[in-house]
Image (cartoon, rainbow, N blue to C red; front, side, top):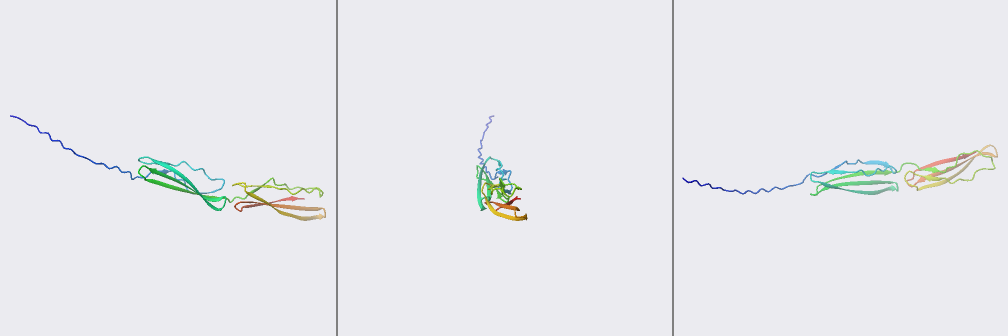
Length: 174
């Protein structure tokens, strides 16, 4: 008796399509804030997680307001993976100047003899946002005392910053 073995080989082809439809995720996502002009936070480090890897880009845009120290910063982070999936987050920082300026080198109140009234001073100005302060001398008011050579002089100055915030202070000379 004779046995014959036949071997048949089958060939199969499988096609696998790999898709990346999952977008990356930015973390943390900074919240919108309103701050004084001298308190603008530094941009935080924002990272991304993604199933296939992604990169993060950062752009900051300034939109001017009604004065130099009132404006809006838009900070935008974009995470993009190799398949073009994205996660975009924009933080809005509203910057304002609502703090009054100050006066520097301001003369102190004094009591003097009538023949040594001090000369008019020239104080300077200071501001929390910048050094753009206009100091204006508003004038002097004399208030008579109990005799012709006894009186009080009140000298007044005003400081104004470039956003219209003002501070007024007076010196009394008796």
